[in-house]
Length: 303
Image: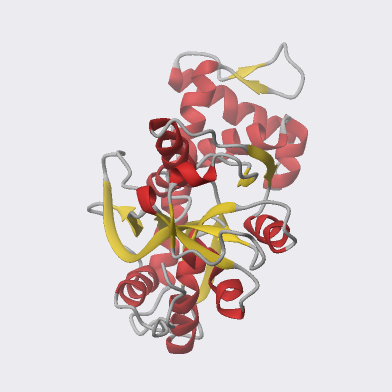
């Protein structure tokens, strides 16, 4: 079982067919078929269901496919590491983040690019729940999350904190309050993100604990859409302060603390434990955790 055969398996699964996989690999279809047959002989069981359309993987094929991806990613990382120069004149940093956590990376991204302009930065949007497994699978070197992953094999490095606030239009009756209680919010119309997150789970549990309805009237795909509708007075939202920092400073949104939800949440970088980061990734982690490029916080609205 060699890596070229695994590459063929990944191509067949990705292209859903032998002929398209052959074209992708610049090989003949018989050569692709022979590689799969040899791989099946080594595995001792079928890897492709030839009775189905689209060259579907068998259960064994799915298992081997996952390992094949990791091995191909490891080969890619090895090549990248060998090509890098120790002075960071080349290389690439691959980071997984979601729509919110990337806002905490922006200062570090700018400073890192200023210091190492020849290094390419690739930030991939991902679901927060998937980021740890993507790091472990070597799809990316570094991930950014707001919770402590339970996955073994990960190192976790806190680099920022944020708090959850209630976002209101400036004309909202509660906008003049410094602090509100969960019980003050039972009649409010909440706008929420359509993806589950630790913040949303925390809010649901807190409202339930205080026997107060959490009336989510609309779910939206982006934080920007939520903020826009709050500005328009169509509802209120619970959101980390950093995600609405610009609107709060401009006065188009008001951030109010919720007494029962005043919890600081750590923003954390994760990477594989015991694995050597590339020169570029190690420099990026150092840049982010040192606070480089992070502006001095402006005076916040009263909370």
